[in-house]
Length: 141
Length: 289
Image (cartoon, rainbow over all chains, first blue to last red; front, side, top):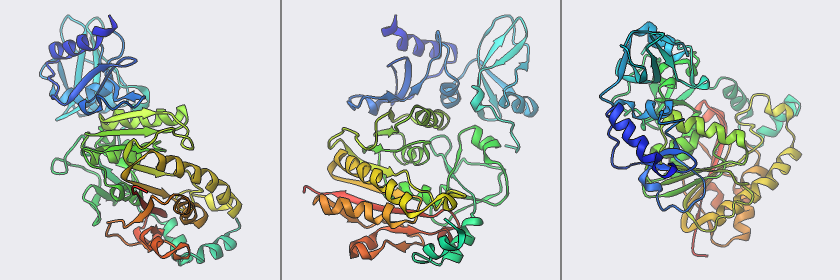
């Protein structure tokens, strides 16, 4: 149900990633599940509030994960330098994470690169970074 | 306009040779996005140094494509000219403000204002075309802007009455201070035509400003028709509008006093001032009228 979608999304990220959002952050439904600061409530200005937090189903957007993934305690994958560059450029990453497909937060060093989907049948992390955000990185971190 | 004629025209404002030379040899700058990384925690392999004017503004010391760096990918930095960075400091939005950016795309000043507001208050980013809104969103997502509302209204007829405590109007302009090749395509009639739109936008934005509020009007061009004259048109017609001092300690020239001595409060930034693009900024307050 639409009115519960934001609540269910929050439950999903809390349970699946163990992300506890700071109290000033609100998840709300307005033409989709969105995330924004609580200060937006009551602003009475018609427009698009915050940004999209949830894609289809309960899948988080890559932006939500890039910005809140550092709070996660579960379902985190760490890449090495070569893998991180490949992931940033949009490639899928070969990896065996067990027998269950799931969303994962992809990290490199202490930074969140974005959202991945572990496909257990093909034993790879499917890249969920939107095409426009992908980059062939030229420097070191 | 033909090169020599343009040089002559520019000489009526500043040392044209210095301006054109500095324009061709501009330094590259970027701004730290403290919504994602604090100044203390910022580590980078990019060769750069802090500017003396603002701790979050850095000057590049190597020729790189900044969009291909990890720092850009992670949303830690935003490539932006130095005057454009300083423009938001002139408005100085704070955490409790309700701010409107009238022509927000692609989101340079908009995202900087979110940073100055520490993602609190309310920041409305407006523009008038879907493609422009899409550019704003790309930055909202990458830079983690959470206090924003995005709207798509005609800047000439915003339809808001006294809603905002601070307003940024970085108006569409002839871009003589920033656009490579802009001078070749430009003539004074071009500026006069754009000024019609700019005047309408300024009136509309000023309507949206609360009494006691402040508005920054800026452009990246030199023509007085698009700068002082646009503001003068507002001051002549709206008694509540008043020019204010800009509290920034940066090299600049004063606004043109041929429109009145109060125009000295406006900043004309020529390329030789900051080794960056040419810029104009003025701060206007709204009294009770």
